[in-house]
Image (cartoon, rainbow, N blue to C red; front, side, top):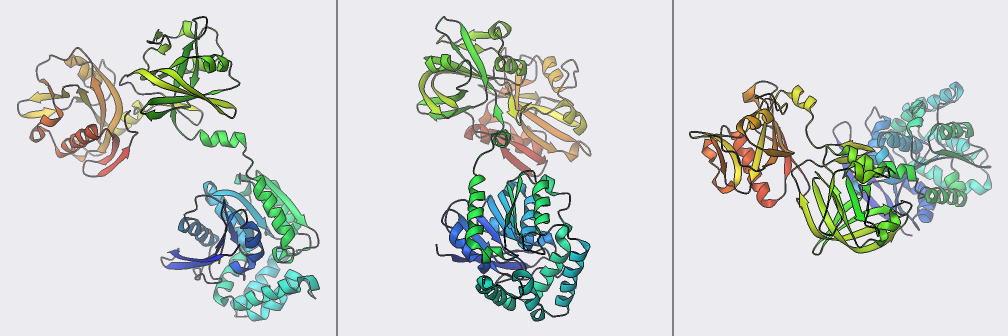
Length: 579
């Protein structure tokens, strides 16, 4: 498949901007090819032709090579890893398979250890690792010659090391290509990169144990510099490493044995697409979800339920929701045959309920508080929301089934929902320890159908607040203040957290949003004021005014967020749109 040239600019460590050039061909998962010292992207043409039949292949010129700009004078391995990051970012590639040869192998390993979330796999060809004293002395001698300007004088020796002396006839064309590239390379880029190559063989000593991605270490048994023993050690240290050896090949095996190298690379890349279920479960666990109890009535009229966090809204018109159930679950047959079911979204105080319905206990409903929906389905009492559904469809989905329900009734409360992430429960309220450490002013925006609750004193209007959230027995806490005023309310999500220098150094203001619950307060000075009649001039300060203006706007747009910053500037972190 024909390749197309690429070129873009990016920042360098020394504050300058540099250009990177290269070649790109094919479609599919991205594969990035990183060449060795003295070469260019052109050296990968046999691999580009073969791999681009299945993959999106990018081969770029390393700093100081081909059409790419020079590295800083004191070139570091991180400079070349940063260039690789710039390639991914510049081409809009989130994750890629990385293939590096010789110096390029050092670069992809450094990148993989620094940016593990950006890689799919690693193939290190003819890589060097912890040279012996003799090997180190030889490579440093060659680096010293380059520093004295002896670039062209080293080419014959390089060809001999990489191909043999004399060069075998079958390698003659590859040696000629290599000689041409070595002769054309910028001597400054070659010298700076080779000096780094001579000293960076120990850069990953003791670090490869952190390498979790599938990793292939491949070399030729005739390579005197990137030895078989080096590749074996690296493969043994990587968590998911393997070593392969090409018999009779030397340092430039990607040129001298392209069919065999390509065959092995394609086999390795294909093997990495086999999903490891444990790793996938861990990655999926990074997505925070709510926790629900799904319940129905059995044919005998008895209740049946299970805990699930695979719940989501599907459609508003018609109103559809879904939940997933494992085919191996004991409740699968019951729910696959049920005509209706209810989903209760648990509140943050209902961890025990979640655990109960996740268990195989026979007396779940005897130990839980619940009531019956209009369709006769069990609804967990105290849940933050519930949805009574008629079955819309049951969709086969691998080892699970997707149960889609049409909502016929629902309800919700202001209680914070229970969350689940990375195998643990999470809550959305601010912890007491965090509040205590921040020395906050804790307030609440409490709303009813008629407006927001204010404490009125003449022309001044304040929101209810305290010096802490709890306990309710402390009249100076927020809940203590509400109790003293006879206000019954449910606090919901955080709405704003900001530093407030007017209340003293280190002071933080924390405001929740919540809902007034009947009966409405009758204490003197309490007023519920509609959103469009808020007395802005009577509010205590600009920070409160700004916060409430945002509240009115977000209530109108139904797109709430959390403000984090100080009294003058900050950011709003968006929350999900209200259902």
